[in-house]
Image (cartoon, rainbow, N blue to C red; front, side):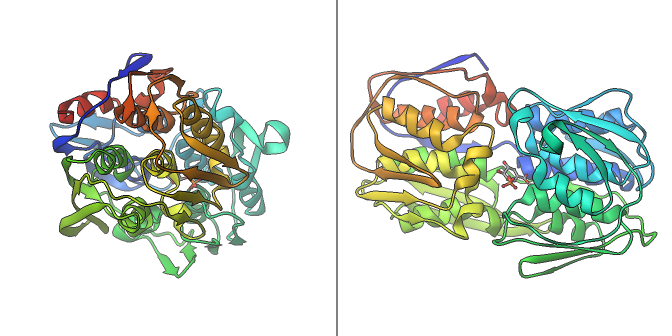
Length: 432
Ligand code: S3P
């Protein structure tokens, strides 16, 4: 990906696209396959930099990884088979890599260090460090454990009953991975349901895990191992959201996305678009490897209206808020996004970033502590904008540029490679 993207206004989008594999599911499939017994076959692996960072980390711990013809083959070393990495495990820009691996590493009998790029080194780790310490983990980081690099001296862990103050799948998954190695049971309860891919994948692998509403329970150290399996990774709805958002915003558009992950904990974006009056249809609905999958057809119209987005909906569309903000600019009336304070600690402060860049394009948008207020209906004009080094901000701005008057240049777009290296190519294919 070049470091600058030029977007010219588009009339509408037409065509069918294939999305990269789901990023969240790819991370989990790599991690769980590495501690399974024997081979796992991963089809649809996402090849953005984030997932490649996870793959590299597990290779550094002695897990053989091979490229098959159509899949990645991981030769699992079993629960106790990981080896001490000789060097720092570099998580790059990926919060998921760091937080999930921290949980896995806390229960190993070796020393390890997790670090990442300048953005990741500013992201809060206390949210995992505190409960991991409660489990008995020896884990340190800068500023009393809040910032990477994290150093972990793995060892004996005990199960805990943890009530998480935030709905975070990264926190939940970190503790479930640590719980797998702990003595006794670990309970994790969250205020709202966050994405549940870890729970589903653990069930798929036959790991003893129970889900009761907002609480998940895992039984660790029971001597049970689990076997490698085949994983089918569906298309990433968070990547698809950019094209869906573009298509609903450009009247006359008709776009189809095939084999997209439709897990209810990830589908909030579609639910909100339907509430806004968008034409989005789902077909070919099925379940593969415990995950819902289907095709999405979108038609662009002229009748989007503003909505309020808050509460339990937020974790179901947390990564889609930048593109949802863009879509709201093209809707009639106000859209209010609240309870989304978590956006301030993503790859960048996404509230500040999207508000300030869309303002440069003429949007009527106001920053709030926990979200934003968008007054839709203003005509946007092309501008020179910046991604703030955040892939989702860069892609959301590219979509905004399609419905601007005049050209838009987005600076600092290399970050798109973290989740979607083929973004620009895919977009070009459907611009008419
Ligand atoms: C992710 C969970 C979310 C999301 C991130 C990926 C995951 O973060 O924003 O992009 O794969 O578990 P939180 O769980 O911290 O909200």
